[in-house]
Length: 125
Image 1 (cartoon, rainbow, N blue to C red):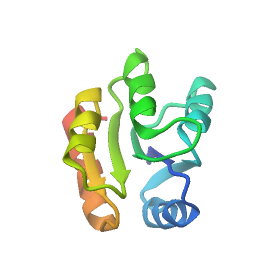
Image 2 (cartoon, helix red, strand yellow):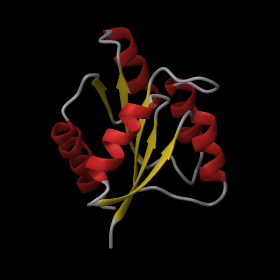
Image 3 (cartoon, rainbow, N blue to C red):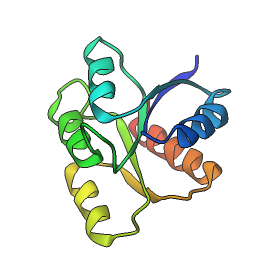
């Protein structure tokens, strides 16, 4: 059975790349911002892992992490943040809030795939 992956990014090109790359191995759900993603989750959906952008409208990456980690249902879901910023302070902020990893755009989808797999292996989904 395929694992599910929630992609949260306001850049359509990133969403298309990730949906195409991961579509063969995962059930992929794509949302354009953190608020849309939270609404989808509140409908009872439960991904095995989340890849979310740092800079998004309506609810940015750090606020999205806070919401996810505050939820008893989703606090253990693996989460990787993607960002166009290679700022140490942003990385530390996301990791402190509970992100499992942080990658800078542009990124290699194969590397992202390995990082997701490592997280899933650790949490034994």
